[in-house]
Length: 384
Ligand code: SF4
Image (tube, rainbow, N blue to C red; front, side, top):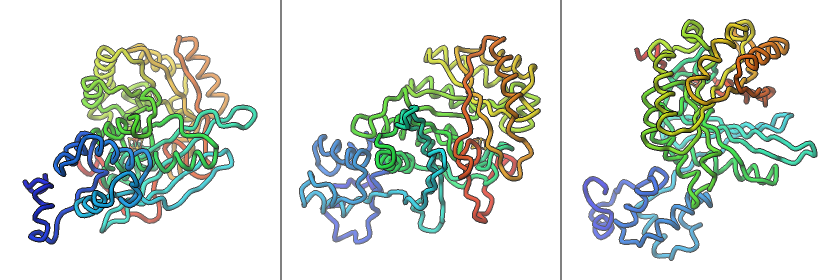
Protein backbone atom coordinates (compact mmCIF):
# COMPACT_ATOMS: atom_id res chain seq x y z
CA UNK A 1 0.00 0.00 0.00
CA UNK A 2 1.13 3.56 -0.70
CA UNK A 3 -0.51 6.27 1.41
CA UNK A 4 -3.43 3.92 2.08
CA UNK A 5 -4.03 3.25 -1.63
CA UNK A 6 -3.31 -0.05 -3.35
CA UNK A 7 -0.70 -0.22 -6.10
CA UNK A 8 -3.35 -1.48 -8.55
CA UNK A 9 -5.48 1.61 -7.82
CA UNK A 10 -2.50 3.89 -8.28
CA UNK A 11 -1.64 2.29 -11.60
CA UNK A 12 -5.19 2.66 -12.89
CA UNK A 13 -5.29 6.30 -11.94
CA UNK A 14 -1.73 7.17 -12.80
CA UNK A 15 -2.63 10.36 -14.69
CA UNK A 16 -4.42 11.76 -11.62
CA UNK A 17 -1.28 11.33 -9.53
CA UNK A 18 1.62 12.68 -11.56
CA UNK A 19 4.11 12.47 -8.66
CA UNK A 20 3.97 9.02 -7.10
CA UNK A 21 6.29 7.78 -4.43
CA UNK A 22 8.08 4.82 -5.93
CA UNK A 23 8.81 1.75 -3.85
CA UNK A 24 12.43 0.76 -3.47
CA UNK A 25 12.21 -2.99 -4.03
CA UNK A 26 15.45 -3.48 -2.09
CA UNK A 27 13.70 -2.17 1.01
CA UNK A 28 11.16 -5.04 0.93
CA UNK A 29 11.54 -8.43 2.58
CA UNK A 30 10.56 -11.54 0.61
CA UNK A 31 7.06 -11.49 2.15
CA UNK A 32 6.67 -7.76 1.44
CA UNK A 33 7.78 -8.30 -2.15
CA UNK A 34 5.13 -10.99 -2.47
CA UNK A 35 2.51 -8.57 -1.11
CA UNK A 36 3.74 -5.90 -3.52
CA UNK A 37 3.35 -8.29 -6.47
CA UNK A 38 -0.09 -9.33 -5.25
CA UNK A 39 -1.14 -5.69 -5.22
CA UNK A 40 -0.05 -5.46 -8.84
CA UNK A 41 -2.11 -8.55 -9.63
CA UNK A 42 0.97 -10.68 -10.28
CA UNK A 43 1.21 -14.39 -9.45
CA UNK A 44 3.62 -15.71 -6.81
CA UNK A 45 6.23 -16.91 -9.27
CA UNK A 46 6.71 -13.31 -10.42
CA UNK A 47 7.69 -12.36 -6.86
CA UNK A 48 10.23 -15.19 -6.87
CA UNK A 49 11.61 -14.05 -10.21
CA UNK A 50 11.94 -10.48 -8.95
CA UNK A 51 13.59 -11.68 -5.73
CA UNK A 52 16.07 -13.71 -7.74
CA UNK A 53 16.89 -10.80 -10.02
CA UNK A 54 17.43 -8.51 -7.05
CA UNK A 55 19.33 -10.80 -4.72
CA UNK A 56 20.94 -13.52 -6.83
CA UNK A 57 21.64 -11.89 -10.16
CA UNK A 58 22.23 -8.41 -8.71
CA UNK A 59 20.04 -6.52 -11.21
CA UNK A 60 20.29 -2.74 -11.05
CA UNK A 61 17.44 -2.02 -13.47
CA UNK A 62 14.24 -3.59 -14.76
CA UNK A 63 15.53 -3.87 -18.34
CA UNK A 64 17.95 -6.57 -17.17
CA UNK A 65 15.03 -8.77 -16.10
CA UNK A 66 14.71 -10.58 -19.39
CA UNK A 67 12.25 -13.24 -18.22
CA UNK A 68 9.68 -10.52 -17.46
CA UNK A 69 7.55 -9.23 -20.33
CA UNK A 70 8.18 -5.74 -21.73
CA UNK A 71 4.79 -4.61 -20.40
CA UNK A 72 5.54 -5.81 -16.90
CA UNK A 73 8.95 -4.16 -16.90
CA UNK A 74 7.30 -0.91 -17.98
CA UNK A 75 4.73 -1.20 -15.17
CA UNK A 76 7.44 -1.87 -12.63
CA UNK A 77 9.39 1.18 -13.79
CA UNK A 78 6.30 3.29 -13.08
CA UNK A 79 5.93 2.21 -9.47
CA UNK A 80 9.27 0.95 -8.26
CA UNK A 81 12.99 1.61 -8.11
CA UNK A 82 16.02 -0.50 -7.27
CA UNK A 83 18.38 1.19 -4.85
CA UNK A 84 21.91 -0.20 -4.93
CA UNK A 85 25.02 0.92 -3.10
CA UNK A 86 27.89 2.06 -5.28
CA UNK A 87 31.30 0.35 -5.18
CA UNK A 88 33.67 3.34 -4.91
CA UNK A 89 37.11 1.99 -4.12
CA UNK A 90 39.07 -1.22 -3.57
CA UNK A 91 42.46 -1.87 -1.98
CA UNK A 92 44.28 -5.19 -1.95
CA UNK A 93 46.69 -6.17 0.83
CA UNK A 94 49.87 -8.11 0.19
CA UNK A 95 48.25 -11.06 2.02
CA UNK A 96 45.31 -11.12 -0.45
CA UNK A 97 42.77 -9.37 1.79
CA UNK A 98 40.66 -6.89 -0.17
CA UNK A 99 39.00 -3.86 1.41
CA UNK A 100 36.00 -2.28 -0.35
CA UNK A 101 34.55 1.19 -0.01
CA UNK A 102 30.85 1.63 -0.87
CA UNK A 103 28.91 4.88 -1.23
CA UNK A 104 25.28 4.81 -0.10
CA UNK A 105 22.49 6.32 -2.12
CA UNK A 106 21.45 9.22 0.11
CA UNK A 107 20.32 12.33 -1.69
CA UNK A 108 21.79 14.84 0.70
CA UNK A 109 24.56 12.94 2.48
CA UNK A 110 27.80 11.37 1.39
CA UNK A 111 27.67 8.24 3.55
CA UNK A 112 30.17 5.47 2.99
CA UNK A 113 30.86 2.06 4.50
CA UNK A 114 33.67 -0.45 4.21
CA UNK A 115 33.63 -4.23 3.89
CA UNK A 116 36.46 -6.76 3.64
CA UNK A 117 37.11 -10.02 1.76
CA UNK A 118 39.52 -12.23 3.70
CA UNK A 119 40.90 -15.24 1.81
CA UNK A 120 42.54 -18.28 3.40
CA UNK A 121 44.64 -20.40 1.11
CA UNK A 122 45.73 -24.03 0.80
CA UNK A 123 49.53 -24.48 0.74
CA UNK A 124 49.38 -24.57 -3.09
CA UNK A 125 47.85 -21.06 -3.14
CA UNK A 126 44.30 -22.14 -4.03
CA UNK A 127 41.60 -20.32 -2.06
CA UNK A 128 40.14 -22.49 0.68
CA UNK A 129 37.88 -20.15 2.61
CA UNK A 130 36.66 -16.72 1.50
CA UNK A 131 35.13 -14.73 4.33
CA UNK A 132 33.32 -11.45 3.90
CA UNK A 133 33.15 -9.04 6.80
CA UNK A 134 30.13 -6.76 6.20
CA UNK A 135 29.06 -3.45 7.72
CA UNK A 136 25.61 -2.94 9.18
CA UNK A 137 25.69 0.76 10.15
CA UNK A 138 27.34 4.00 9.10
CA UNK A 139 29.57 4.48 12.14
CA UNK A 140 28.62 3.15 15.55
CA UNK A 141 27.14 4.61 18.71
CA UNK A 142 28.96 2.37 21.21
CA UNK A 143 32.37 4.03 21.16
CA UNK A 144 34.65 1.14 22.17
CA UNK A 145 38.00 2.72 22.87
CA UNK A 146 40.05 0.43 20.58
CA UNK A 147 37.76 0.75 17.55
CA UNK A 148 38.18 3.21 14.69
CA UNK A 149 34.48 2.91 13.73
CA UNK A 150 33.50 3.81 17.30
CA UNK A 151 35.49 7.02 16.97
CA UNK A 152 33.28 8.12 14.03
CA UNK A 153 30.08 8.07 16.09
CA UNK A 154 26.77 6.86 14.64
CA UNK A 155 25.08 8.27 11.50
CA UNK A 156 22.51 5.77 10.29
CA UNK A 157 21.48 2.14 9.98
CA UNK A 158 21.92 0.28 6.72
CA UNK A 159 18.86 -1.33 5.14
CA UNK A 160 18.90 -5.08 4.56
CA UNK A 161 19.28 -4.39 0.83
CA UNK A 162 22.42 -2.33 1.48
CA UNK A 163 23.92 -5.17 3.51
CA UNK A 164 23.11 -7.76 0.83
CA UNK A 165 24.57 -5.47 -1.85
CA UNK A 166 27.97 -5.62 -0.13
CA UNK A 167 27.85 -9.42 -0.16
CA UNK A 168 26.66 -9.61 -3.76
CA UNK A 169 29.33 -7.31 -5.12
CA UNK A 170 32.12 -8.96 -3.14
CA UNK A 171 30.90 -12.38 -4.28
CA UNK A 172 31.53 -11.31 -7.89
CA UNK A 173 34.98 -9.96 -7.05
CA UNK A 174 35.76 -13.17 -5.17
CA UNK A 175 34.96 -15.27 -8.24
CA UNK A 176 36.97 -12.99 -10.54
CA UNK A 177 39.97 -12.79 -8.18
CA UNK A 178 40.09 -16.19 -6.50
CA UNK A 179 37.96 -18.34 -8.84
CA UNK A 180 35.54 -19.16 -6.08
CA UNK A 181 32.43 -17.73 -4.45
CA UNK A 182 32.50 -16.53 -0.85
CA UNK A 183 32.20 -19.29 1.75
CA UNK A 184 31.50 -17.40 4.99
CA UNK A 185 30.00 -14.12 6.15
CA UNK A 186 30.68 -12.33 9.41
CA UNK A 187 28.78 -9.27 10.57
CA UNK A 188 31.84 -7.67 12.13
CA UNK A 189 32.42 -4.62 9.94
CA UNK A 190 31.29 -1.09 10.77
CA UNK A 191 28.49 -0.88 13.31
CA UNK A 192 26.90 -3.04 16.01
CA UNK A 193 24.77 -5.57 14.10
CA UNK A 194 22.19 -6.19 16.83
CA UNK A 195 21.64 -2.43 17.17
CA UNK A 196 20.17 -2.74 13.65
CA UNK A 197 18.38 -6.00 14.42
CA UNK A 198 15.67 -6.15 11.75
CA UNK A 199 17.85 -5.23 8.80
CA UNK A 200 20.59 -7.61 9.91
CA UNK A 201 18.23 -10.55 10.39
CA UNK A 202 16.43 -9.81 7.11
CA UNK A 203 19.72 -9.56 5.23
CA UNK A 204 20.98 -12.85 6.70
CA UNK A 205 17.67 -14.49 5.70
CA UNK A 206 18.12 -13.25 2.13
CA UNK A 207 21.77 -14.30 2.01
CA UNK A 208 20.83 -17.83 3.08
CA UNK A 209 17.77 -18.04 0.79
CA UNK A 210 18.18 -20.49 -2.14
CA UNK A 211 16.87 -17.72 -4.42
CA UNK A 212 19.34 -15.25 -2.86
CA UNK A 213 23.04 -15.91 -2.19
CA UNK A 214 22.18 -19.45 -1.04
CA UNK A 215 24.80 -19.60 1.70
CA UNK A 216 24.09 -21.97 4.59
CA UNK A 217 23.10 -20.14 7.80
CA UNK A 218 25.83 -22.20 9.48
CA UNK A 219 28.32 -20.10 7.54
CA UNK A 220 26.88 -16.79 8.71
CA UNK A 221 28.01 -15.27 12.01
CA UNK A 222 26.38 -12.27 13.62
CA UNK A 223 28.49 -10.58 16.23
CA UNK A 224 27.46 -8.33 19.09
CA UNK A 225 29.08 -6.24 21.73
CA UNK A 226 26.64 -7.89 24.14
CA UNK A 227 23.16 -6.41 23.67
CA UNK A 228 21.30 -8.71 26.07
CA UNK A 229 17.76 -8.01 24.89
CA UNK A 230 18.60 -8.66 21.25
CA UNK A 231 20.57 -11.84 22.08
CA UNK A 232 17.41 -13.18 23.72
CA UNK A 233 15.38 -11.98 20.75
CA UNK A 234 17.60 -13.99 18.38
CA UNK A 235 16.84 -17.07 20.48
CA UNK A 236 13.09 -16.33 20.59
CA UNK A 237 13.03 -15.79 16.82
CA UNK A 238 14.92 -19.11 16.31
CA UNK A 239 17.36 -17.40 13.98
CA UNK A 240 19.65 -20.14 12.63
CA UNK A 241 22.85 -18.07 12.38
CA UNK A 242 25.93 -18.32 14.57
CA UNK A 243 26.38 -15.85 17.38
CA UNK A 244 29.67 -14.28 18.41
CA UNK A 245 30.12 -12.04 21.43
CA UNK A 246 32.76 -9.31 21.30
CA UNK A 247 34.03 -9.76 24.83
CA UNK A 248 37.58 -8.34 24.80
CA UNK A 249 37.89 -8.21 28.60
CA UNK A 250 37.04 -10.86 31.22
CA UNK A 251 35.95 -8.66 34.16
CA UNK A 252 33.58 -5.72 34.54
CA UNK A 253 36.43 -3.60 35.82
CA UNK A 254 38.47 -4.08 32.64
CA UNK A 255 35.49 -4.07 30.29
CA UNK A 256 34.32 -0.75 31.74
CA UNK A 257 37.64 0.77 30.73
CA UNK A 258 37.39 -0.09 27.02
CA UNK A 259 33.67 -0.68 26.25
CA UNK A 260 31.18 1.99 27.44
CA UNK A 261 28.26 -0.44 26.85
CA UNK A 262 29.42 -2.37 29.91
CA UNK A 263 28.18 0.43 32.19
CA UNK A 264 24.57 -0.38 31.30
CA UNK A 265 24.97 -4.03 30.24
CA UNK A 266 27.57 -5.67 32.41
CA UNK A 267 28.81 -9.25 32.52
CA UNK A 268 25.90 -10.36 34.75
CA UNK A 269 23.43 -9.17 32.10
CA UNK A 270 25.51 -10.83 29.40
CA UNK A 271 25.64 -14.10 31.33
CA UNK A 272 21.88 -14.09 31.72
CA UNK A 273 21.41 -13.52 27.96
CA UNK A 274 24.00 -16.12 26.94
CA UNK A 275 22.47 -18.78 29.20
CA UNK A 276 19.00 -17.95 27.84
CA UNK A 277 20.29 -18.13 24.27
CA UNK A 278 21.90 -21.53 24.78
CA UNK A 279 18.91 -22.94 26.66
CA UNK A 280 16.61 -22.01 23.79
CA UNK A 281 18.81 -22.75 20.77
CA UNK A 282 21.27 -25.39 21.99
CA UNK A 283 23.86 -23.69 19.79
CA UNK A 284 27.40 -23.04 21.05
CA UNK A 285 28.76 -19.50 20.89
CA UNK A 286 32.04 -17.84 20.09
CA UNK A 287 33.72 -15.14 22.15
CA UNK A 288 35.90 -12.67 20.27
CA UNK A 289 38.83 -11.57 22.39
CA UNK A 290 41.24 -8.93 21.09
CA UNK A 291 44.50 -9.46 22.91
CA UNK A 292 46.00 -6.18 24.13
CA UNK A 293 49.51 -5.97 25.44
CA UNK A 294 49.61 -5.81 29.24
CA UNK A 295 45.87 -5.13 29.51
CA UNK A 296 43.97 -8.43 29.16
CA UNK A 297 46.72 -10.97 28.52
CA UNK A 298 47.72 -12.14 32.01
CA UNK A 299 47.31 -15.54 33.67
CA UNK A 300 44.57 -14.03 35.84
CA UNK A 301 42.74 -12.80 32.71
CA UNK A 302 42.87 -16.30 31.24
CA UNK A 303 41.43 -17.72 34.47
CA UNK A 304 38.58 -15.15 34.46
CA UNK A 305 37.93 -15.81 30.79
CA UNK A 306 37.62 -19.54 31.50
CA UNK A 307 34.76 -18.78 33.94
CA UNK A 308 32.84 -16.87 31.24
CA UNK A 309 33.37 -19.63 28.68
CA UNK A 310 31.66 -22.05 31.09
CA UNK A 311 28.33 -20.15 30.95
CA UNK A 312 27.49 -22.24 27.85
CA UNK A 313 29.39 -24.46 25.40
CA UNK A 314 31.60 -22.04 23.53
CA UNK A 315 35.02 -21.31 22.14
CA UNK A 316 37.27 -18.28 22.13
CA UNK A 317 38.76 -16.55 19.11
CA UNK A 318 41.87 -14.73 20.20
CA UNK A 319 42.37 -11.91 17.73
CA UNK A 320 45.71 -10.25 17.31
CA UNK A 321 44.77 -6.56 17.28
CA UNK A 322 45.76 -4.31 14.39
CA UNK A 323 46.95 -1.12 16.07
CA UNK A 324 44.78 1.95 15.42
CA UNK A 325 46.26 5.45 15.26
CA UNK A 326 45.40 7.41 18.41
CA UNK A 327 44.59 4.29 20.48
CA UNK A 328 46.82 3.55 23.46
CA UNK A 329 46.06 -0.18 23.58
CA UNK A 330 48.55 -2.14 21.51
CA UNK A 331 48.68 -5.61 20.00
CA UNK A 332 50.02 -8.19 22.49
CA UNK A 333 53.54 -9.46 21.93
CA UNK A 334 53.99 -13.03 20.67
CA UNK A 335 55.46 -14.30 23.94
CA UNK A 336 52.41 -12.98 25.83
CA UNK A 337 50.11 -14.68 23.34
CA UNK A 338 51.93 -17.99 23.88
CA UNK A 339 51.68 -17.71 27.66
CA UNK A 340 48.01 -16.74 27.42
CA UNK A 341 47.21 -19.74 25.21
CA UNK A 342 48.98 -22.08 27.61
CA UNK A 343 46.95 -20.65 30.49
CA UNK A 344 43.73 -21.16 28.54
CA UNK A 345 44.63 -24.79 27.79
CA UNK A 346 45.31 -25.29 31.49
CA UNK A 347 41.77 -24.06 32.19
CA UNK A 348 40.24 -26.31 29.48
CA UNK A 349 39.26 -23.45 27.19
CA UNK A 350 38.94 -24.14 23.46
CA UNK A 351 40.72 -21.29 21.73
CA UNK A 352 41.94 -20.44 18.26
CA UNK A 353 44.12 -17.53 17.20
CA UNK A 354 43.10 -15.25 14.38
CA UNK A 355 46.18 -13.63 12.92
CA UNK A 356 46.17 -10.07 11.82
CA UNK A 357 45.05 -9.71 8.19
CA UNK A 358 45.15 -6.76 5.83
CA UNK A 359 46.87 -4.45 8.31
CA UNK A 360 48.83 -2.74 5.50
CA UNK A 361 45.48 -1.44 4.15
CA UNK A 362 43.79 -0.78 7.55
CA UNK A 363 41.37 -3.66 7.00
CA UNK A 364 41.82 -5.42 10.34
CA UNK A 365 39.45 -5.92 13.23
CA UNK A 366 38.65 -2.52 14.73
CA UNK A 367 40.31 -0.60 11.91
CA UNK A 368 37.36 0.09 9.60
CA UNK A 369 36.34 3.75 9.49
CA UNK A 370 35.77 6.59 7.10
CA UNK A 371 38.41 9.06 8.09
CA UNK A 372 38.40 11.75 5.37
CA UNK A 373 37.65 14.67 7.70
CA UNK A 374 34.11 13.43 8.36
CA UNK A 375 32.22 15.07 11.26
CA UNK A 376 31.58 12.97 14.37
CA UNK A 377 28.19 11.29 14.80
CA UNK A 378 26.26 10.27 17.94
CA UNK A 379 27.80 8.12 20.66
CA UNK A 380 26.30 6.61 23.80
CA UNK A 381 28.22 9.25 25.71
CA UNK A 382 26.51 12.10 23.79
CA UNK A 383 23.04 10.48 23.71
CA UNK A 384 22.96 9.48 27.39
S1 SF4 B 1 33.76 -2.62 18.40
FE1 SF4 B 1 31.74 -2.82 17.44
S2 SF4 B 1 30.34 -1.99 19.00
FE2 SF4 B 1 32.39 -1.28 19.58
S3 SF4 B 1 32.55 0.74 18.62
FE3 SF4 B 1 33.42 -0.76 17.17
S4 SF4 B 1 31.74 -1.26 15.81
FE4 SF4 B 1 30.85 -0.32 17.63
